Image 1 (cartoon, rainbow over the protein chains, first blue to last red):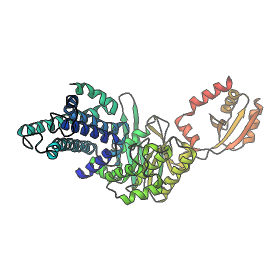
Image 2 (tube, chains in turn purple, brown):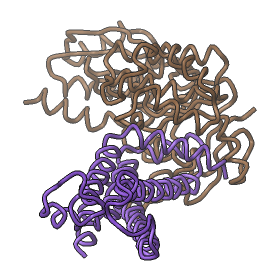
Image 3 (cartoon, chains in turn yellow, green):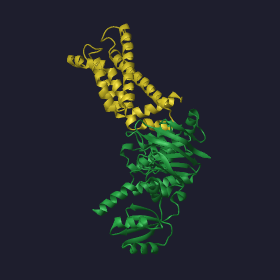
Image 4 (cartoon, rainbow over the protein chains, first blue to last red):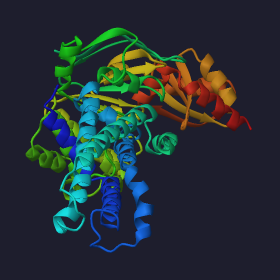
Length: 181
Length: 311
């Protein structure tokens, strides 16, 4: 097995140059921000209308689904572009190619989690007395743990769908019933 | 030293026998052409050598290595591309080479060197999807060169290129050959291979039907191109001519292989049979002629041509 660092570097280069990565991350971060700054959230500083929170909150709960979609968008096209095959011809073993995707999954889960935590704690940092309570409460920790588990489950589903369907469009289509659930 | 050695290499897919007991040897320094019509098993054979297709039977060695673990190390001495150039369309040419270089453990300096060799340094920052087919093929050549491999495997490198693009690719292949690289090149562009390769192997329906140096395969047979008003009668007469060893149709007319170079005797014979030729010329036998003879690829074309002429 090659150094995981090499595989991670390759996956990072592929991901950050892909517009789909920034669009998905941007939408996820935007929804998180609106939900955290809307009334009833951590702060009322931004003054978003009440109704916004009700509309946006379900989208926040769909955060892990964004990750599954991103996983499919980043991984599945490798088969259509035949870069999966070329990577093997260039010297990766098939196992190393799939290990690289597992590394990508782990990094994306960490990235989504950190994004959520940073945006979630911003209202308290900006307005320590505004929301009342402590910085992190036991219930928050439980929520975070559940969120990580959900991220892992959905990203693994995205990984498996990509490997089986081998096309981004068909992959997202196959994942739709899962998203509905 | 044998760089590639296959023994009875076979690949059977559920519906088709793609590669049938292929045995061939490619020696160091050869520019080896692997020729065959579309669907003859060329890409499947290369796929097995590169480890992306599992053989059904037979074996092969790269640089003498045959065991799976040794093959992985041997493949580090190979640069290869299969079918069309396979790159990330949204990445620049340079970034695509960075990925290949990272896999091969190569530094950045070599990327610039390879872009220079294929004449893409100025376009290295542009996205792969904006490249012309010729540029894509050249980028694929750059990628194969990254690790300065001893063996370069190219699958249809001139496919779909215009004459200028073909010349560019041919020049790069010659440059690599001059540097002592062994090149294994699959193609169905026969005149292109004849200009580039030192050795060839011809495959038909998965089986090797001829192998040797280009001169050995082409042979020293004397051929002539003949045209007359009645193509069918001409063919019948030529097939009956005692000095004729084979007759086949081509774009230029009927090509007859002769045991002697006495074209006057042929002309007299045809006139004696009431056929007055409109064209009779000696012709150098080409790799295409040898290929047609070995693969029987002209049969369908010949029949179609005759039907067209008759109507």
